[in-house]
Amino acid sequence: MITSVLVANRGEIACRVFSTCRESGIRTVAVHSDADANALHARVADAAVRLPGAAPADTYLRGDLIVKAAVAAGADAVHPGYGFLSENADFARAVRDAGLVWIGPPPEAIEAMASKTRAKELMGIAPLTEVTEADLPVLVKAAAGGGGRGMRVVRRLADLDAELTAARAEAASAFGGGEVFVEPYVVDGRHVEVQILADTHGTVWVLGTRDCSLQRRHQKVIEEAPAPGLTPGLTAELHDLAVRAARAVDYVGAGTVEFLVADGTAHFLEMNTRLQVEHPVTEAVFGIDLVALQLRIAEGHALDDDPPRARGHAVEARLYAEDPANGWAPQTGRLHRLAVPDGIRLDTGYTGGDDIGVHYDPMLAKAVAHAPTRAEAVRRLAGALERAAIHGPVTNRDLLVRSLRHEEFTSGRMDTGFYDRHLAALTEPAPDPLAPLAAALADASTRAGRFGGWRNLPSQPQVKRYAVAGEEHEVRYGHTRTGLTAEGVRVVHAGPDRVVLEADGVQRPFDIARYGDHVHVNTTRLTALPRFPDPTTQHAPGSLLAPMPGTVVRVAEGLTEGTTVQAGQPLLWLEAMKMEHRITAPVTGRLTALPAGLGRQVEMGALLAVVESD
Figure (cartoon, rainbow, N blue to C red):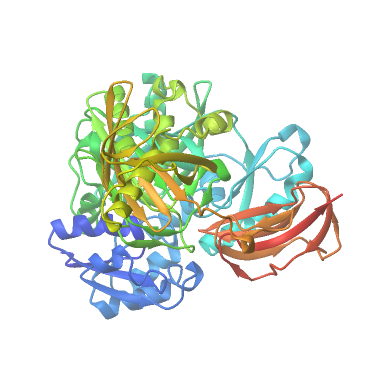
């Protein structure tokens, strides 16, 4: 009987496992890096053990330290979560060798499937060993891990070596190993997966399909269960292949078999020997707790002969602190508030007041809606996200809402090229035109009280400037004996945290929250601008600024001040939140400054280089 579980992970998944453990009466133990000392998962656990350092290689990828932490805290079992060491056979063995229960598949099954190259061989599929023009496009992929890290699409043979180098570096940083392989890239296929669950008594459950086609950088954004539009024959084939993969390695526990589906044909991708990020949609449809079942299987209990029946449809959206309109650049800073309407499941590793740092994945939360039909579940999730209070850095919330309401998605015709085709339209700025005015009136209402009431005489209009989605907006309003006024609208009410405006006979309320220069008006995020620009913030033309905080991990070979560079040429690589971001020359010209050297940590907006145009 398991009495205490250490979760060898962080953030949302650690909190998720702790929740089930608490309901089961099981004591919880967290591990945390120095960067996560005040993280939610460390705060909610019954005990927490420090892993000195901040980088994953020094902390969450140190299996030896995690095993020592489990023993020191008196845990009798280890749950790996997903990512990090969750598919590391040596770590699973180390846990068992320490006399602890491993809540996962046998190390031998992990070993057989954790390497995507060996998994493909097991399923009778050989990776590409020599790539020719006829093979293009191809996908460079890390042999270990997941989450889209260490993956690159190569469309030109001349780019292959550089992308192999980049993928190896990213895989080594994220998973502790740089092995990569090359496979054909299926264009515009659907990403479909099958959830399995197996016990130690020979029973294998197939828990339906999931569609995870909406992806950015090969990392899933929106997932749903069941996968829509599959024929009964194709669904049966996917289920059979999943069971075949599980039985081939004597699988135990929760796992996922992933496929690309194109033209009615299933192409095996890999088997993930762990719990998936998107497991909540399966839980919602089947009415189960996969973590609770993992615990029971680890204790030796048998599954029922048949799985429960599926009911309804579930959709999950991953909320990221990132700017989709700016190359998906991750964002950092204080998350002031995170709340969704009732009836929506929210799995998160953050709460109001937490800081979003630079060291880990920028996912804030997963929002899940379940309903009798797909259309109802999609509508429910889109509406909830639209009304959610998300105060802090820029997020992908608007992208999620627009994606869920896009005709291609609502009709079930999406594929993995969805964002390649539609990202520009989905990220087109569309701020509420009244939001800046509401922000200005809320601010004016607080200042009016400090000066002893409203003006009795008409005065010159007051002017406020705000930046919204990268665009500047100027608003004007006035003070009169009866209160605040603005052209074209009637000010029904103006307070510091709520403004009501009437336009064309319709009254609209605006909830206002201010955090320094940042103002949230309903779901619109604004930045108050000073009346006069600060001359010290001006940069020379051609300046390249860091789009996010991070570390310079590579500089182009031979690059020095005075070097001639071509437009689009990679200059340096910035690593932030477990992803590499390539910084390229904006124009053809001469590199006149390169203050960001190899290994330097930079803040957002820091000067990286200056290219003087020809």
